[in-house]
Length: 114
Image (cartoon, rainbow, N blue to C red; front, side, top):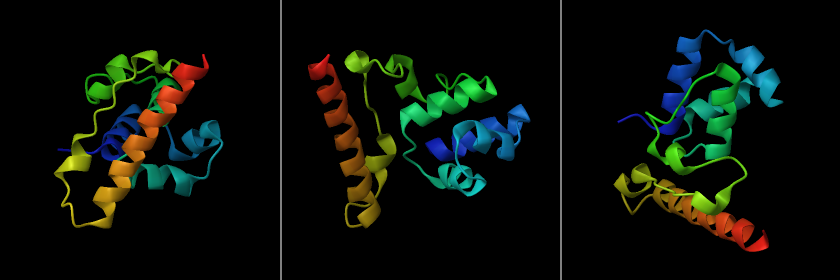
């Protein structure tokens, strides 16, 4: 099973959109874009932003995007199956678990502040 970064990379490459132009549109470096491709837990805001830029709908490949709308945290459903498939004894497992929890917490804070 491919992780988010690999799914994004595949979509970008199939779209024909250049990495340089994507980096410019994101306001980041090319290295940052390549780092995204290697990241299994790319934030959904970034996924949606890249989707808009390359005109690609990620909802079929990333089930989390079906209920996630940028800026609207009321319906956020965070599913991170890759986090729990890693070995519990690795740093990566706990880092990813923390990031998922942090995303949930931030979504709750945004909902509470609205």
